[in-house]
Image (tube, rainbow, N blue to C red):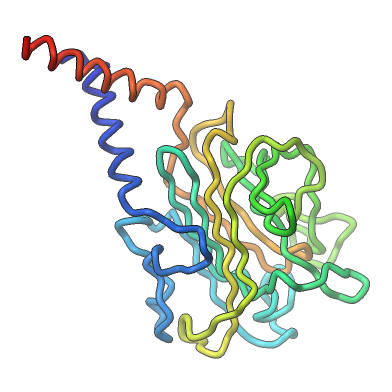
Length: 266
């Protein structure tokens, strides 16, 4: 068996294994292995799905509006609590848990700030080339971002909207649509997750086709915050989006294997 065929078979087996555990985009967290039992372990995902600690981030906080979340304030209402990442041969899956309702008005004059968008950074250098909208008719759409909106806090966590921290983008300002994923933002809160059993939680869950990232591959970061950037969360997964040409070899390799078997049978 030649090396290209052998490598294709190994890669195909790896990708089949990665897709064996299906994730349904419905806002439920059970298929991620998460629970609602009032225990700290509720936040720990299924290790068969999220296989490495780098693929998730947990920062569960609680309290009223006067609680500091770093960089900003807002307590449970503006808490970004956990982010989980899973990669298959065709999709990037994301699950975010937050205290922010999708119905929160975006009204800065009234000190109210709505949810932001997912930001994805290839090369892990703070450039955030892609964004995924989380609200409205465009929820799930993927954009090659030209410009981001930013929050209220500077790099020193000081209130300074004129000079915001550019490492924490909030919402897509301008960009070109490059794909459409499946995204659900739950509007009914649930409680009893983790030790802060009285807190209300909402889920943003998404499946993003890797074809949206044409021209980009390799390591990446995923970031989310609300439009004030009072609290942000980021995952730095030890995962790599493959180059499109690598995926194209799989069917060729399998076709070659079938042809080889037929010749041997003959």
